[in-house]
Image (cartoon, rainbow, N blue to C red):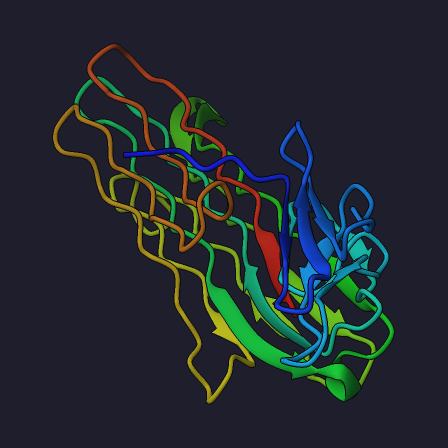
Length: 250
């Protein structure tokens, strides 16, 4: 197989339409190499493509934003549609003891919705729910008792336009109904159609084995806390994951 080395390509009229630099750069129309970060944009069948700079305040078409702390979202210039997922904080896991591991917390609920420009407005307020506190052993008068794990907090996405507010409810803490029962999944409101997604319930322990926390629809946000293995005395549970808001902008 032979190799063909070329420095430029011309059309049938002899005009250079594409050139190649020694370092691999492309030059359109013989002289225009564009600038760093620009992309090629078609101008239709009758013209050469051009180098284009994507505009917007740190964003633009095809951008994904992930929020894990409360903030204000400002849409990028030129964007017209947004798909938003709002996930509540995960519940904490219950305490463990000599006989049983800790029960897992429930995951946060997930609300999701499409917004257009009118619904989104010029900004949106984002509130991120915290993870639920860990269950623990403590004193009650003269007794030592297991205190249930805390619920995760609610996450909200509140657009400044005409769109409705999304709420991903926090997952329940393990051990709230009984020390060895996993926490319930969180609720959600105002999803599209509506298809509100309830979080997953945490698992109860398997003997001294731990109960797993409820899984979240997105990695790293809203998962219920796993319990700890039992069999080595009384011990605390774990804190649930904080919630999150994920925005697909285009």
